[in-house]
Image 1 (cartoon, rainbow, N blue to C red):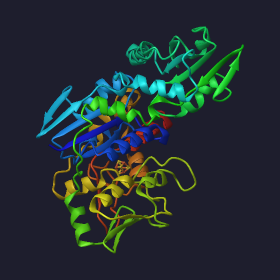
Image 2: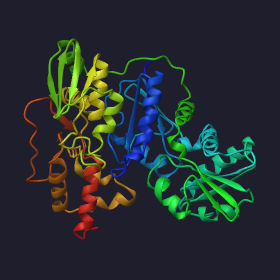
Image 3: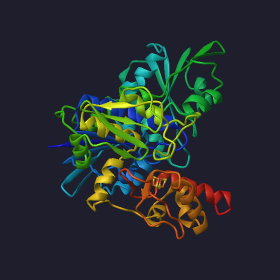
Image 4: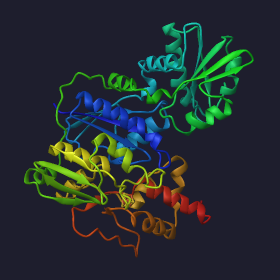
Length: 436
Ligand code: SF4
C-alpha cells in the first residue's frame, strides 16, 4: 500500500524561519525512505493547506500538524482546509489519518531535554519550559503544561517550571519561580523566529547564551521545534516509521519529457538535457549545486530579504541542478515551484480543482476574517499587483477588467486558487484605504 506523510505548518509571508523547520523535518523523513511521498504544506505559504492533497496518489496519508498547541489551527483551520471529517477521513480511495499536533506527543519531552542539555543543563538545574500562551485561548497552554509535566516526571532535572510569553506566569518571573542557582529557559516554539531570536532575549534582558543576575545564572536554549529529533516525534505520531521505501508519483508529462529528453521551459526555469540527465536552470544560470541548496537560493531576493511568493517573476539565479532521474527532476521543479507540475498535469486532464476569490476570501478566519468585505477596487488592485508579477496563471475568474497573460512558450503553470500572498495583499489594501 502506498503511503504519504503530510506535515502541516503555519508558515509566514514575512519570515522564512517560520517554515524552514517543517521543510527540514520533511527532508529528514524523506531521506529515511519511510513513506512513498513526504510533503509540507502551510497556512500562510505555499503549498497551502487547501492544496496539500493535490496530486497525492497514496492509499493512506498521515497528516501531522507541526504545531505546539492543540486548538484553533489544529481543530478548526486544518480540518476545514483539508476537508477532514475527524481523526480518519476516507475519500476517493484515500484514507487520511489526522494526528494530534507534535506539542501533544510524549516524545517531544525528550527533545526539550536535549535542547536543555545542549544549553548546559545538568541534573541539579531547573528547566523553565517557555510557551507562547495567550489569555484569549486557555487551550493554548495545555500542551506546554503537558510537556513540562512529562519532563518533570522523567526526573532528569532538579525542577521544571512553566512560563509564558503572553500569559501568566510570565517569563519575566522565571527566577522567582525556582530557587535553583541555574535556570535553563527552553523555548517551546516551532521556529527560531522573531520571538525566540529577538523579542524573548530582549524582554528577559539576556546577555547571550548565559546571563548572570543576582548571583544566579540564566541560560537560554534554542527553539525545540528546530531540533532534528523532532522528526522522531513526527514518526511517533505517524506511528509507522518502519514502512518500506518507495517512489513518489511523478506527473506523467514530466516522466515522458524526461524519457524523450525533450527540453522545455517551466515558469522561469529552463530544462535541457545532456548525457542522459536533465539540467534545470534559472534565467541567469550559474555553477551546478546540490538540490538541497536550491530552496535556500530561490527563497531569498538577490538584494536580500525573504521571497515568499514562489512564482514571483525574477527567479534568483547563479545556480543550476543536474537531475539524473525523472524523480530528481520532479523534486527540482517542486522545490522551485511547489505543486506546479502536479497542477499542470491536472489542468491538462481537466481534473484541476479550482476555487475562486470569493470562496477563498469567505473561508478566511481569525484576523483575516474581515477580508471577505474587501471592495472590488481593493481586490482588483491586489490581483493586478500580486498576480501580475507571478509566473502562475490564474484558472479562477479574475475581477472584471483584469487580464493576466500567460508567459509565451513553455508549459503554463496553472494557479487553482488565490494564494496566501494575494489574500495578505488584499488585507493590507483594506487597511491602507481605510476599509479595515
Ligand atoms: S494567486 Fe496570483 S500571485 Fe498567488 S500564486 Fe496564484 S497567480 Fe500567483
